[in-house]
Structure formats: C-alpha cells, structure tokens
Amino acid sequence: MPVTAEAIPGHLLIVDDNLVNLQVLFRTLRGAGHHVIPAQDAESTFVRLRHQIPDLILLDIMMPDVDGFELYRRLREYPPTAEVPVIFISALDDNEAIVRALRLGAVDYIAKPFRPEEVLARVGRQLELSRLQRELLRELEERTLLERSLREAKEQAEAANRAKSAFLANMSHELRTPLNAILGFAQILARDPLLNEPQREHARSIHKGGDYLLTLINDILDLSKIEAGRFELFPAEWGCGGFFREIVQMFRIRAQGKGVEFREESLSPLPDTLFGDEKRLRQVVINLLGNAVKFTEHGTVTLRTGFAHGKLLIEVADTGIGISEEELSAIFEPFRQSGSGHLKLQGTGLGLTITMRLLEVMEGTLSVTSTLGQGSTFRAEIPMQVVRGASAEPQYEREVIGYCRSAGEGAFHLLIVDDNGDNRQVLRLLLESLAFRVSEAEDGDCCLEQVAATQFDLILMDLRMPRMDGLTATRTLRSQGVDTPIVALTAAAYSEDHAATRQAGCNAHLNKPVQLEELLQTLADLLPLKLNYQPLNSGDGEQPALEPLTPEQRERFVYLAKRGDILGLGRFAEELNDAPNFSQQLATLVRQFEIEQIIRLAKGMEEWE
Image (tube, rainbow, N blue to C red):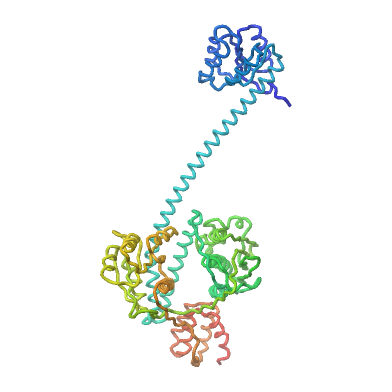
C-alpha cells in the first residue's frame, strides 16, 4: 500500500515567493492534516524558524534577492535546520537544476506545475523516511548506551572477580598455613610407635577433621575457579578396578555405619584403564555418593558403573528422602541444600553445584530423577578414552618406612625453606622419621647463604616469605648455576601460581597442607631413591587362636559391629585385657577399617560357645 501523507502528519515549512503557489501548497498539505508554516523569502524563513523547527522544508528555487540554492546553503549552516530534509519545488525542470539540487543534498525535487497527489505522496514518503531515520538513530543511541553499560558492567564484574580471586587466594593461604601444621602433626602422631592405639586413633581423627575442612576450602576455591574460567583438567591414565574398589570400600563403611545397605552393580563391563582426570572424577563420584548416604536413613545406596560409546557411565541411586519438584529445579544452585533439620547442617551446599560444573568442564552431563519420599537417581556420563594394552596393577594399602639410594652413599640432605616454624618442624619430623638429613632456613636470604656453604640434594621452598620470597630465591639460585632440584611449597590456590614456579625454575609444585604420600612421591621422582614399603595388612603367617568372650562381651561386640561404631570397637578392643589375641586382631581390623571382616567375626560368635 503506498505511503500517504495523511497517515504521517508533520510540521512543514513552505518557502515560495509566489503567493498563489504558496496558498495551493498550504491548502493541500493542511488538508492532509499537516501543520504548515508559510514563508516568502529568506528573511521571513528565519523569523519562522525562531518559533518552530519543521520536520520537512519545501523550498522554491526561483526567488528574488536570495534564490533557493543560496537559502538551502544558509539553512544547512544554521544548526537547528542542518539535518532537516529539503524538497526543492521549481518550474526549472531541466536536468542541470535537478542535478544541482540533488548534489547539494536535497532529498527530492518536484517540478511545477505540480499535482497535489504527487506532492502529498512525496511529502509523506520523506516524513516516513525521516521518522524511520530518527527511530534508527534512537535505536543506535540506545544500543550504544546498552553496549557502554554492558562494557562497564563487564569491567566491574572482572574487577570484582579479580578482587574475589585475590581475596580467596589470600584466604586460602591463611587457612592452609595452620592446616598444614594440623594435618602434618596429625600424620606424625599417627605414625608414632610410642603412642598406643587409641591415641593414634585420636590423631587419625584429627587428621580426618582437618582433611574435611580442607575439602570444604577446596570446594569453595574450585567453584570460584570454575566461575572465573580458570579451572584446569589434568588427564592421565588410571585403572578402573582400583579406583572404584577404593571408593566402594569407603562408602560401604559409611553406609553400614548408618545401617544402610551399600550395593555395587554393573551397567556394562568397564575397561581396565581409562585416560582422564582421575582426581576430578573422584570428586564427582564422592560428591554423589556422599549425598546419597547423607540423605538415606534406611534401605539401600547403589553405585552402578559402565562404559558405552566412549563414555563412562555412573549412576548413584538411593532410597532416601527424595527431592520435591520445587527443589529439583534448584538443587544445582550454589549453597542450595535439600532436606530439612539436621541434614541441612551437614556440608556447605556446594557439592552438587561443583559436581555439575566439573562435569561441564569435562564435557560430561548430569541428570537426576527423584520421587519425594522414595529416593533419587543421579546419572553422570563422562567422555573418556580407553587405553588399550594397559594393565592396571592393584594397589594395596601400605606404609612408607624408609628408602634406599639408587646411587651414591649416605642419607639425602634436604633443605626446608619456610618462615613458619611449625611448617618447618612438621616437614623435619616427617622426613627425619624416614632417615633423611634435614636443614632449615627461615627465608630466601638464609637459603642462599646455606646453599653457598653446603651441598644439598633437594630444596623444599616456601613461596610466600618476608624479605626475599621463594620465587626470587629460586631465580637467584638458577642464575648462579645451582641445579639442585627445588620443590615449591605454597598455599596459593590458582594454576598461574604453578606456572610462575615453573618459570622461576622450580622442578615441582606441592600445595599446602602437604600430604606425606604426595611429598614422598615427589622426592622419588626427583631423587635417585626407591621407597621402602611395609604392608599395613600383609596377612602373612598364622593367626593366633582367639580366646572365647564372655556373653556380655559377645553381646557388646555384636552390637558395636552392627552399628559400625569404629571408635567404640577400638575402645572395646583396648578393654579386652583377658583376651589379648582377640584384642590385637580386632584393633588391627579397626585400624584398617575392615568392617566386613569385623561383621563376619561378629556373625561367627554363635559358634564360640
């Protein structure tokens, strides 16, 4: 449908020295609903413009004193009308006049004598074009403002992210430093042969509590790193059998302690060896199983595993409290906790959030089905690469009792560089118990002095220290030609800290709190040594005959075994002065968390009459 002037009323300025033409144009346009302002020359034109700036100007060319071309030039120099569209109306219908008008910038040219319908159509079209142009400019301005707002919001978010990252990194350092001492001394006490079994059990409890606190800290840091896009995966080969056997053993004990049955089922056969990030996968499985056990008061928790179409399949099903439809849509939000009462007091509400984000980073998926009051099933599918021809040897629980050198003689001499005396003492006691020679330095300057005077086999270097920090000390040593292996020890949280240590010249990086197993493995990687192990439960030799228990003792033992009360069983073993063989075997089973063997022993009580 053609554009009509009636549909687009506007403010129009008509400039024509011919009064008849002016009246005809005025009536034609006024009749179409436009507001029309007449003018007969340049002077009256600018008088009218003081009161109203038009949407469109119709300008005659042939006028005395100042012709239309000159007036057009003045209108363009006058700021209020510089952008107002102009249509020339003239009896000059030669091409030269038309071309000149259009070259000056006129939007149209109407030849006299004109037809009213043509004028209305051309005026309507130009008003519509002007309206569209104004809307486009307004949209561009709004978009520009929006882009500016988005850019400012992004800059503010990035600044907030940097501030949060800096805060978390500093808090991580401040929390990990005392945790390093707590976990370190707990490990030392647990290995102390002078302590009795209950005391060692207390030390292990301290270590577990500190380890749980460390897990919470790591959860918060992991979430912040994922949100900031600073999360990294470290894929490697790992054996499926040992991986799931360890997890199943861990959660069977937890489930039995609550009186819940733990089942393991197969969706399809698992490969022997897969290639992926074992640590993060372990975090996913532990989070899912931990929630299942936590929210199941009776019935079963089931772990199902399989492998199909290049994906590792993991299902965790429970007969617990279930999740309502309202909660189901929000369970993956940070700090969102399901359940009620005491169940909400357990944990931070980050487990499922981190599990979902971890799986997203691993390009996996997580789905859930649940019925309130009947239970839930979580299913994870994670792309994994099968490693052909690899055979994963089963790993047995064992304890490092020393080492032997592959080359050279005497004990390895290590230098611990740390401004915190407790941290130095923890490392010293752990390493000296394994026959390492240990020296200490409290900062980078002291480290340089000792390295200049003594030949060390390896340096354990803290990074954050007063005066000269660990990175500066490492760079200085490397610039002096010192090639001694250096292991960075830090409570810093992010991967760029690891990159900085590598650039400075460190050979390895260990996070605080330092775990003895990781420390010893790092030493084995960097030094010509072989670690000597002692199995915690070798099973060699004949077991001594077990003494019969009194009816009261049997009743208490069976009761504690059914409850899975590890601490209670440990105290019970300590109190059995009249049954030393039974006491010793039970204490060993308790120390190794062999719940199944304890239960079998309890079930056989009826045969000991």
